[in-house]
Image 1: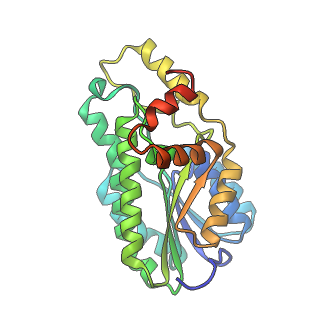
Image 2 (image 1 turned 135 degrees about the horizontal axis):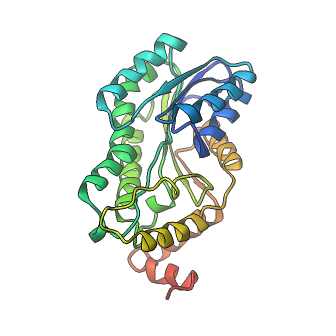
Length: 274
C-alpha cells in the first residue's frame, strides 16, 4: 500500500448510511471532499443524510437497497460507477442484531442476521473488487464489533457474524498485501445507534424478557457516532489494518489477550454479574 489515503476527490460507498455510524461517516467524508454513494434499506432515513452531505458541496447518490437481496447487491457497483465514474473507498457498515439466547432463536432469523452482517459484506466486497482494483489507491473498511473480540452470552449469532467479518477481513488483507488496495477492520465498542431498538425478536421469546434484554444491551451503547466516525477516518487515512474504538473495546481486547479461554468469567464480575 502506497502512502496515506486521500479522501478529497474520491468516491466512497457507505452501507447502513441512514443512521448511526453510517450517517456520521457520510457527514465526515463529505466534510473532507469525498463524493458519496449512500446505501440503506431505509429510504426515508437516507434522504436527509444525503441532503446534508450535498450541502457540503459533494456529489451524492442514494441507493435504497435490501442487503439480503444478492442480485441487488451484485448490481450496486455498476450503479455507483454510473453515478460517480469509479470507486475508491468501500465501507461495509450495515449491521443488525437478534434478541435472545441461541436456543430461543429461530434459525431463519439467524440466517437473516448472517445475510446482513456477513454475507452482504462478502458479496458487496466481491462485486466491488474490480472497481477498487482498477484504482492506484483504494481501501475497504469492514465494521466488526467489540463482539468480534469477545463473545458474550446472549449474542451467539451476532458474535458469530462479527468474528466472521474479522476473519474475512484479515484473510482478504493478506491476499491484497503489496498492492494499492488496503483493508481496515474496525472494532467499535458500544456506539449509540438504533441497532438494539431495531433488533429482531424471536417468535417464541417472551416479549417482556426480550424488552429487558434489549434495554440492557442499549444501556451499553453510549458512544456518540460522530467521534467514532472521526476515529475511523483517521485510521483509514493512515491505512491502519485494525482500529479498536472505545474504552470498552480496548478493555475487552486486553482481557481476551490475558485470558483467551476464561475471559467471560472476568467480564461478568467486572459488570456485576458474577
